[in-house]
Length: 163
Image (cartoon, rainbow, N blue to C red; front, side, top):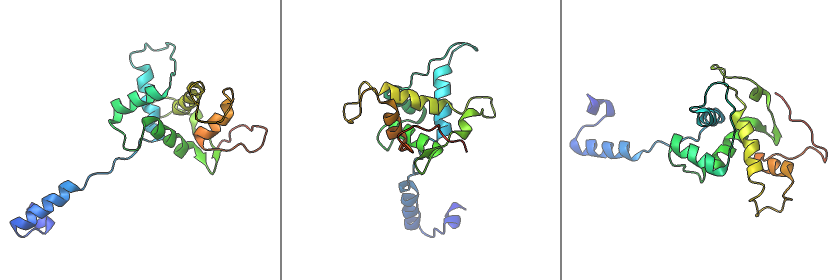
C-alpha cells in the first residue's frame, strides 16, 4: 500500500524514495515569546511553594541552561539571541514597543509579561560586562533600546505604547 501511495514501482524507486524522505530534515522553528514566557515561569517557579517570593534572575547563562533543557541545541547562535528575537518579534513593530498583552494572564492564569520582565533583567545583568559597546555603564535605556532594536522617539523618553 505504501509503495502505491508514493508512486513507487520498483525496488530502485523505493530506495530512492527512502533516501529522499530521510534526507528531508524538518527545519527547527525558534521558540516564540509564549514558549519563552512558559519556560521562564516553569524554570523559576519549579518546586516553589505557592505564595513564595520568586526572583527572576535572567542572565545569558540562565537562558542557555533553560534553552538547552527545554529545546536542546540552538541552530542560530545562542539561546539568549533566540530569546531576544522572540521578544522583538512579539513586542516590537517598526521600532516601537507595544506592551498591550503583557499585562494580561493566559488561560491558566499565568502572567504573559514574564518574558518581557526577563528581558529587562537581562539588559541590567549585562551592564557590568558589556565592554564592546560604547555606551556608558549607567545608561540602561540606551542598552534596552539596543536589545529591543528600538529607537527613542525624542531626547525625552516616552512611555511604551499599548495596542
